[in-house]
Length: 338
Image (cartoon, rainbow, N blue to C red; front, side):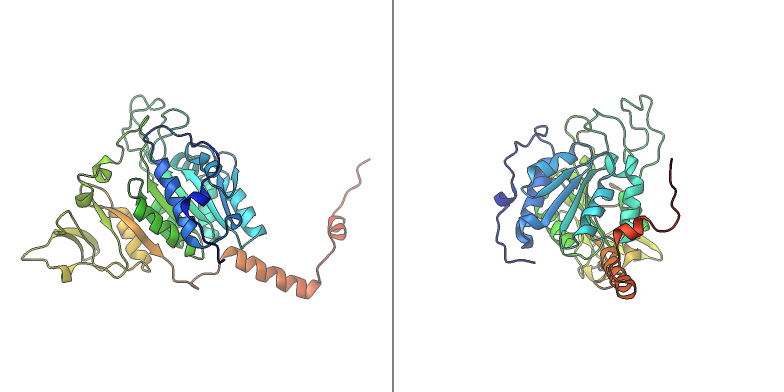
């Protein structure tokens, strides 16, 4: 942490932002710039690493260090950046196609290693840059240029995958809620360990209103649940709905004669089992889309990969010394080619 004092504009690069008019990416960019301005970190200590896709243009628009890499491989490159300089705040910028399809394996192992990286996934349920093919998060039956008779694939739930792979921080946000998005970005930046933020982002050209069931401003209050640690799970335009635990199931109830606010489930962001249940149940209109921080492992719960690596190197150096690269190169099995 530094004494740096910035505004959002300090994180705006001199590059012209080029996304389609009305694209949700603009709000995500502004929210990340705002979050970094509030983080207190120096600009030169922030790195944005992206793969391929509309979302992956973002590093150009951040006045920080950045790398626009190759399809699906941003986590591998970001891991190298973080391990070479653990003091950096490293953000992986990806989409549902880039991060879950060709980059799915890299994503899984980034989460399980608990490297202190922040994965920001733009989920628009489509391949936007390549003009509208279905993605791992597209709904079954989705008619696209690559599935003219409807997709047969079951929907990938990114939150489930992240938790199953070992993510120690999970949050969700809407692209039309910059305040909520900025808050979870700051929370992720402060977390020590692998962090995953899924942003429901609208692609106005190839999948417009994909999230309209719960993201529409008219119905959003009744279709989304904003989680707050230690607060009851209450939602609705009139705050007349809530979540209760019945047996092993989460259920939506209406407040009134039978249920009071005191009967509602209280959110515990440190409860991983609860986070699993919330991810599985989030399916508007039957259950509200859950937003905010779903899960955060308590600080000190698991050592980060970079800290373990640093300790391992210290131990080896104490036993064997700093070593000699030339000797290492010529040690072991070698062959002379004539």
